[in-house]
Image 1 (cartoon, rainbow, N blue to C red):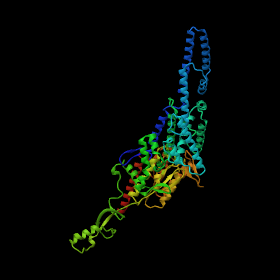
Image 2: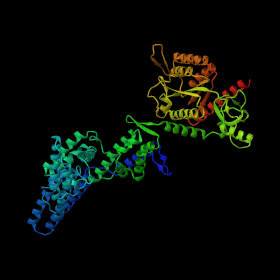
Image 3: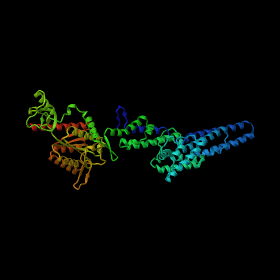
Image 4: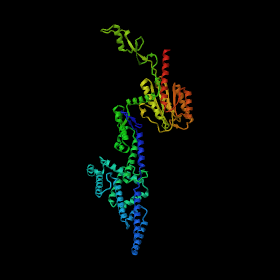
Length: 627
């Protein structure tokens, strides 16, 4: 689910890590497209050009009057030019106030006046669209007729909400039938409609939040100045407050985060802000998804729109993985929780085992049998003539063949003791092992945890499939230790605590082995020296660097294991000088072995050592029997 996989057709399916990386790339692309500044820069530049055109017209009119030779006309022209220049020189700095002042200006240039009126009308339309687009994505450059329809829609929406608040049928279907053209997303319920509108309003709020206080003040001043329909603006503001109360977790106080250099129109910036908002929400969801089934809640069409077809198809494939696993008999749903079946546990173990064994030479594997037969219970798949004292494991087919061969055919078939053929059995030896796995926080921090967990799964699979009479116990240890069942292994994780309590782990391992027979050993995988132990009052003592008392009680437990004829073989990952020193003391006391290994070779070391151990005790068993 995290790393991806190849499906049955050999097609690569993205994992969540790759999907999240694509998401982060898309977020960067959107943020670098441009930035919304209320389109002020473009409007201010056009307004400055209009003012320059007006100044040029004033200069030209004054010059023509002077050149006419009519002194009276020239004087009137000078006075009018002076007055107009004074008006232009006195224009305020803020855009809204400049537009208001120019609205009272006596233009000399008809073209400048026409351009100014067109700019004001365009700005009025843009401000109106900004309000409308907070509610609907279906309307741009709104006409008076559309404006009337929009106001009717807002009134109907308010009525619908009031009906639901009174516990009545809100009549959502009737509303959509009448005003559905405003919502091309086609929401199916009132809640979907409200969430859709809330997301648009939250994205618009994020745009405003990304503006400077001066820009926001200009936006408000322009709206107050140019938008005459106060009632419509009030309706939208009231709806926004209502939706924010109903959907408080949509990031109403976020910043849009648009960082590009190119100014973006409001509609384009709003779409970018909505996409950024949706990407943030999708990222939170994907990071928290703990199983493929959780991915069913993802809107695949939205993922396709945001991240493309490949990522959308991959997430859809992962979402359907739960059904695939259930149909294959690999998972069950118990009390609302997904659990692996015994079949799945065997499959996981087999895969881990095959992966680790795949790196080893074939002749290293060996078999769990010795080169002689004995009185064990395991069939050797060979037969022999029965001798007095042999276990009477009769091979009926071979016995009947012997009788037919001796008798020469014909019925009835009469058996004789010399016809008896029995199965040979292997001489089997039993060993008992406890695997101690370090679950302290340092293991994942150094990327040691997953290799250790994989070894545990593989070792369990090896013993349960090839050596079923052997015993394997598992102990996880960090601040304290606990026994783990094999079925817990696929889901076991590290502990978010500090402390490596080998002493408690050895105590549990020794108690578990005390109930077993055969050769006994402890395999310990760790990346740190002992830093915690259980005190006499039952409390946990932790200190780093390790306290002398912790080392002492841990070695005391090693002595007890040695006295009980339990060998301790230690596999050290990222061994420091302090860890090496401690393990050397441990091996001197216990006469076990120590291996300095890496996460990449850990599995090979453990499995090869385990098989060598099995061959050793098998040979000893054969020698004792032969003697």
